Length: 194
Image (cartoon, helix red, strand yellow):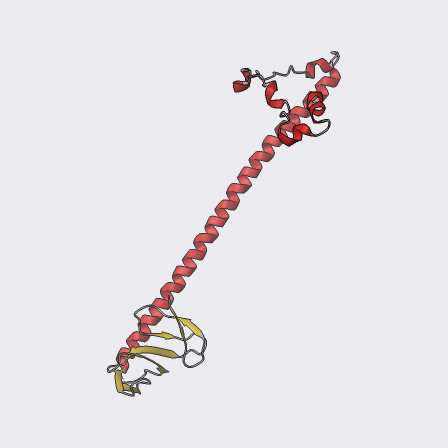
């Protein structure tokens, strides 16, 4: 719903679309929003629509004189109040439904927790019985009973199962010295020792 500022007190009020007015909840005044007969801009005004006759107002935009019957203004007030009551009832209904859903969710969680507690109590009872039974029995407890044989996964090398080509030793030998470098003293011996 759109919000409109009350011209009397300046508070923001929600207005039903197409109603033509509202009742301000802050200052308790009836406010109307009607279009000017000449320029069709919105004329916002407040006052009293009691009694018979008409209500006159000059448009703030074009200064044209507008006349509205008070019966029409009272009908706008009645429609605005009806929409307010319907919105309040819808909000109340939504709050009741949300509360009911929360209560239902809470009950289901409580039931679930109670079920888990019951399961846990039975499990603890079994453990207590197991320990008491182990103390009363004459059998010797062996740690070998706790051992389990590990199952190793089968090795699957994939592409690594096939050997690649062997390295070529010629690629790792130093390059032969030639040109002016071959005439330097000890150049031939250094390449032989490598």
